[in-house]
Image (cartoon, rainbow, N blue to C red; front, side, top):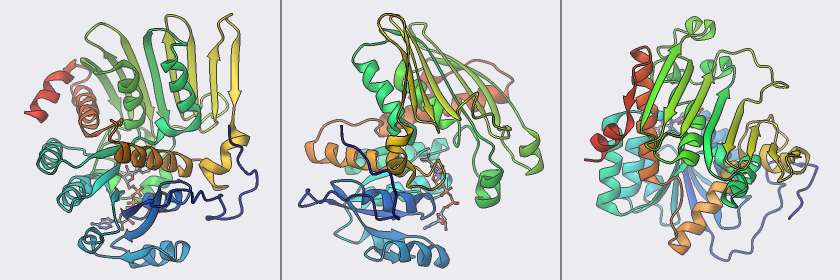
Length: 376
Ligand SMILES: NC(=O)c1ccc[n+]([C@@H]2O[C@H](COP(=O)([O-])OP(=O)(O)OC[C@H]3O[C@@H](n4cnc5c(N)ncnc54)[C@H](O)[C@@H]3O)[C@@H](O)[C@H]2O)c1
């Protein structure tokens, strides 16, 4: 195992691995969360940032000063016209993802799109149609999967250490007042089911496979009401697979956090041979050993500079670097990757089913028929 430096010295201080003689060029549109993607690319072996695009001149100037060797533009068409852009990273507000993905596919680029890839039916159809037409590939940037503790949990699951997973329980809770202030489109341009809840719903789908039915209830917290938020910001979800396995998801975005008691994202696997839990922001992986002992693996001090770059927890450098490298490897080798567009659209249908069920007060919604409607 490689060891990471325990002192972060600035945005480019992370040791660069320049062993790949021909890294793939990354162009990013939307430079708030997308700034992290540009910086994270320096942490990978096989991806290098070459271009950034944002409509806001102040953002372009600030990010451009951090990455002087990256070309900045206000024109997405200009970014797409560059031959050195091989992968386009889409980090614009949710409702713009589809048009930015379709344009990238049409320009012959493969795409990393942050979660959620889309947040409505028409957008899902247009992205699927463009992928079929152009043959381009897309990775959904489900960052939680690529956080170190969640990677360890997954590797142990794949080694069979928890046996058959019988129940998955996942949550993401976080007080989001800062986000209302910064990104006004979240008030009426999307739904918390596509924002925060996309993380635990993706984890459910990752471990249980296709979900057959969901039943969900929702409510608005005092924080959501104060900001005039159109969607519910509290969700409780029960899900079942066709063969009767169970998933539970909880999300609360107006909560007063109790981080010692509950991490903001947790995923618990209850399996036939053991139980495991991965946590974020703390970087812990807890699991049963074969003799029943509870084992706690705490990797925060080893990996925090890689994942957080000495900024506040939650900046996603390590997760974005991990998924960029993973996608570059898949593009080079032709190997399948996950979550790809088809899986991402299925998870979109799961999110949409949750939203619809909650609006009816908990009536079950058939996810499979939504997937068929989108894909037909
Ligand atoms: N864990 C994660 O992976 C994670 C975390 C936070 C946000 N996100 C996702 O990232 C996306 C962006 O979120 P954010 O918080 O950065 O939003 P934001 O509103 O703070 O930033 C969006 C940026 O896109 C720019 N922009 C808007 N329209 C544009 C256009 N047509 N062309 C070029 N630039 C344009 C804006 O000027 C702004 O700088 C969302 O889809 C969000 O869900 C993912």
